[in-house]
Image 1 (cartoon, rainbow, N blue to C red):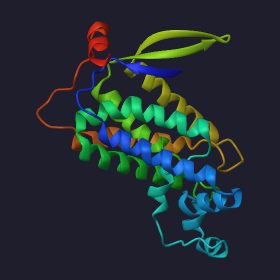
Image 2 (image 1 turned 90 degrees about the vertical axis):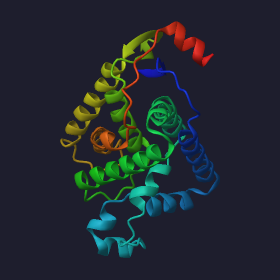
Image 3 (image 1 turned 135 degrees about the vertical axis):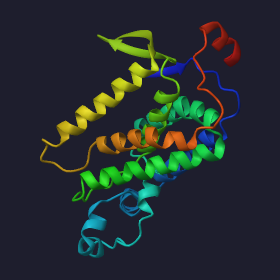
Image 4 (image 1 turned 90 degrees about the horizontal axis):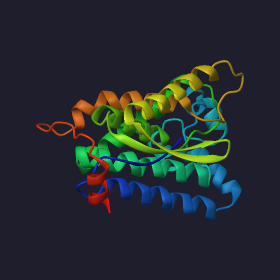
Length: 242
């Protein structure tokens, strides 16, 4: 299910959201411009490798500083391919710009970074022995989606579905769309425990940790004295966003 747009009008310019998208794009352009060996070194140095902190001797042997925890932050600006970054940046734009509009720029930036760090911590605790780098903005974006589902549960999300290769467009309540997404992460994360292979795939528990963190942090970051915005009829939506 690919979300295309929502029915919440945005009043201001989403400065932080677009800045984050630009930073991720710049880093990705750098990634694809360097040799594969250098790229792998970049992923291990700035991606999150749990064994780097749980096994200091392993980190020392591989030249990784085990007392530098910056990778819990920097990993959220790395991506493993075009589909990875394009998918993440689209979700960041769609949900992040709306949440930023409600929180304010500085609050949103701090909220985003804290959600990403919490997502990294969740992944670390679940897969503490992994020697494979984890990276991507999806954990922080999951936190944004957690805030979105609380603030705008009745918003409608225009969604693209493919059934037998045929595209269908349907409107789904945000509570259903994001709720289904979270259940899928939870199911996949639980199922991953049955796998004998550690790391190397989707960091489901980073998504789960980021999402829960976003919900828990929201009361501290949403602006006071304003009730959550309601979704608007389509005709108003199209007028504001044309």
